[in-house]
Image 1 (cartoon, one colour):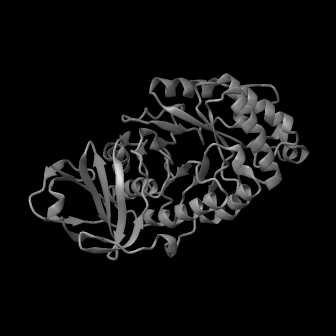
Image 2 (tube, rainbow, N blue to C red; image 1 turned 60 degrees about the horizontal axis):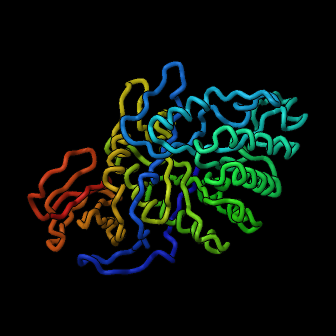
Image 3 (tube, rainbow, N blue to C red; image 1 turned 120 degrees about the vertical axis):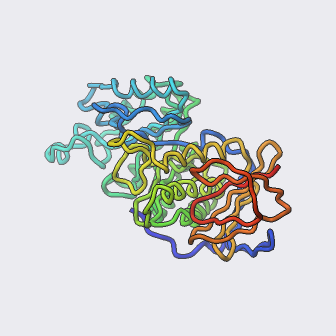
Length: 405
């Protein structure tokens, strides 16, 4: 689904000295503390005959995609509204203190014109024949869920033919019309841009912004799928942010509204899978992403599974999601850098105390803990915290958290 990056952008390749190491990459990390809303999920089977239980961990944000609540699900025939499932999801989110992101998109066959009706498709990637049908759909949904759905995303992966077969002009019109309605009906709700996917989505995304699409949205959405290692997120995010800046939109937040692991990389244990998820969350924040919706909690065809429905258990990657919330939320990331040997060091400050997350993306390596850090304990991902008994530890692709006094 995504193409791999072979080189890091030269703009982020700089040298620095820290702890006697020469760093090949040093990121300009955000200055704000990491909020809980950085963490999001897709959960698909809460409403199935054998439903997935709600995760036993905080789920601050939830994106309702592949959840049976697209436009064709909500209005299968013109004026015939079916809100029962979305009503249940909204109530469940309120029960758990979870904010909702609802993508608006996919066109019902009745709104699409004779060709799609002839094909018998209930939903398709085409634009509606009449903008009025789109206006009615958006106004009806936003009016019903005013104050309960906090963000709306205009379409899903429009750079892929499976999801969008219309023109750029049509997408700009749909975005403008939806934005005006959402802001008028529910001024507190956020409008998220159509979210292109992977590195090959950048040309579509760039055209959308160059033709003025950014003026209609509050948030820039993108799907950060990469082919192999989570470290490939760094150049992808840097390029996306460059495009945003070139179009005068650097003040708008960037959300990763969907990504996971496709399984191109070798993932031969739950611990390795946990490390991939953890590194993705760490690096996306370090590179400037403000929300990250993992795809998906209970979807079994992805390369990394967080909950195994057949076994009714949370996997190592699922526990890593919870650990990342505990490690990151409330902390400020002061720095994050990779040295020439592929060891990453990300420094955090929490309540005035320093912490460091360290890993090596290429394999197991010895790591000399600097005495100046005054580290007292180490927590290896998926393991309990323990006292640091020696100045050298073994690190690898699974991150470890070092905590000072």
